[in-house]
View 1 (cartoon, rainbow, N blue to C red):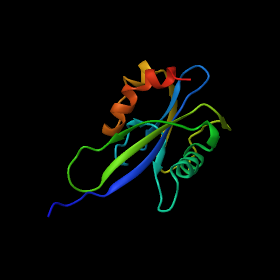
View 2: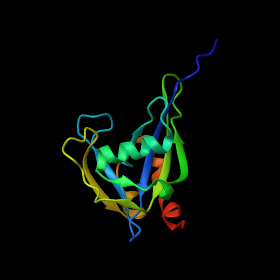
View 3: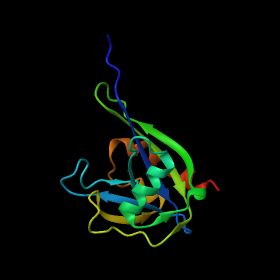
View 4: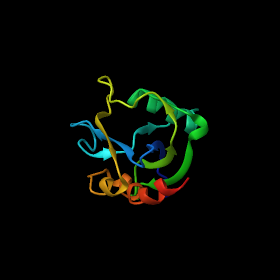
Length: 144
């Protein structure tokens, strides 16, 4: 009998500033994909909605409150590797939030944040699942 992989849902957000730049977070050295840039977010906990997970993760990672009504699901990326757990990143956009994004010292995931144009983001080293997401940034940012 063929083994069915476990799907691990991950939510992430492309925070889009008024100037069209997108916030990315650099993973902590020593962590999986350490030193690479990614969209902030994280795993969805059991019995947690996608949006609730995203609100929680962004509050923890960046110290800001996303406006739930401003969240827009835009695309996803799935781990093509056979066997084991398969991660699926569900990417949202958000253009409205409360607070100033920062990289809190207690944040176990990130060591830095930065605002990038889609062209700049395309030059950054990102984890494998983020490659397809970054490739779509110009289209995503251009959408209303």
